[in-house]
Image (cartoon, rainbow, N blue to C red; front, top):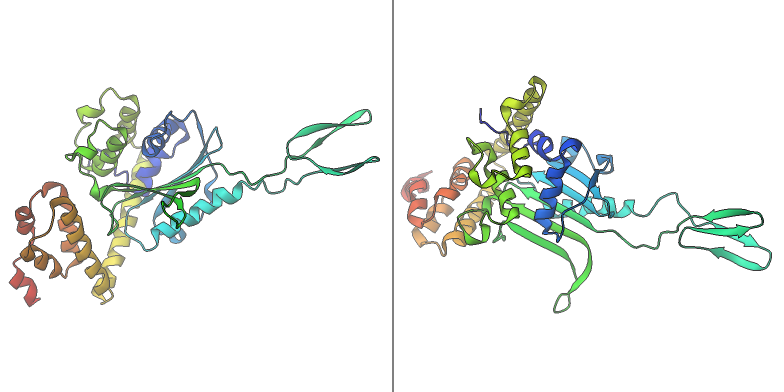
Length: 343
């Protein structure tokens, strides 16, 4: 068993980021990912019943839903396995905190007085009425607080070139200015993170978090880069497998089992003959990923990748991405082309 739990599991993600007692960790993570000019002052974990819940409905997306003192909403999702329409899911989830801002059940109050027409006030106000005072309810004027959706993905989209990708709602006219800045979507695609590249230098806090998520379960000790940082020291302390209670250890192993079972079902579909299209997609992803990292692929290596017909082999090569820095090194992981052609 690894020294640290896997933060990309349901249990691990919630254990580290989803506890009220340790909410400064998710606050720091959100501020780093969104590159906020100032740290969050405080957050409140919101009731996730407003979002679809249960493994069947969420298909392995594990949500943290919180709100800061300024009224901004944050949804953080962890997606371990590749599933279709992830971006559509992010848009769908964003609609919940948007709709919640309509202040359901609160209606403007109309007061009738002898010499005035019916009146509706928009802000809370005290209105004289004889010897008493009546308070008018606040009417919603459609002004929205910001909504941020952050998805941590253990895979990369085919067209992604960087580990961090940000999107807003934009118009279709040049220069494609923002139509609305109220909703922002961020994807963190962990396989594209490589701390050896300048853009992923660990002197940036967002890159420290990417490193933490990408490699935590593989580490034997806390790297020096994190020592002296109160937030990360606390996160490493929480993630110690030995510090888990017997009940938490059972829950963690159950979380790991769910992932393995999901993957087994996923693999069974390929064995039944339904995976040809996905294998082709895996070949394209593998070629695209290493081409972005190493440049144009030599024809022999490109042919070798296209000849792969085993999803497990494709996944195994992808897991070695950090150790592969030249096409010749990748060639070592590819079987002889003539052998693949005989399969």
